[in-house]
Image 1 (cartoon, rainbow, N blue to C red):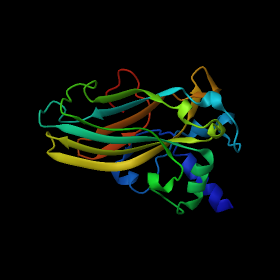
Image 2 (spheres, helix red, strand yellow):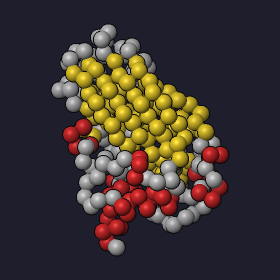
Image 3 (cartoon, one colour):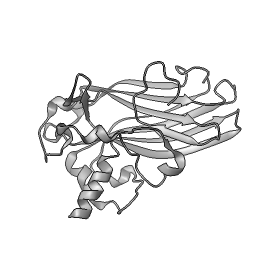
Image 4 (tube, helix red, strand yellow):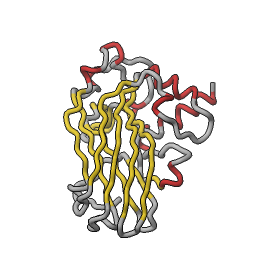
Length: 227
């Protein structure tokens, strides 16, 4: 029982990221969140709490290549394939119980009952500005796709992605595939003890000067070009 609880706790702590995670670390473990992500009372799990107000009608998906040393080189490019899933609460915790002890890098196939909300593939060859390095998908239908009985508070959203980035400045190609898991709600910016529906999913990448990849699911502050 204690082992199951600790496994769930580790996975829950991967919900939101506190900083970019280097590629070398990302292979074997989930990304650690800000410690305060679980400090609010609304994040303490109660089983099957009906909470339709925490399901946004639509979700936006924003993927950004935040930094690339060779961004202004014409030969540079980046490709992204992505899938956005909804995972019902019961199926999510069933998958958590099956995960091996210690660090884990699970795949979508381990989360039975997942529901595909959106998918796509994009290649960008003009990367000179942050806007040109951003992929926007707006108005992904969410709430009406989820059966009413499954609209519980502790269901999750999963982003599965595969990225290929060529930096002509470094003459380096980076490949990476992985997932991010996040709760379908977030803290109200006006009241940290209040949960509100999450309306945007972020996916961010950064190529470091040494050619390594960092990744994050944090919202990028306006005006920031680095993390």
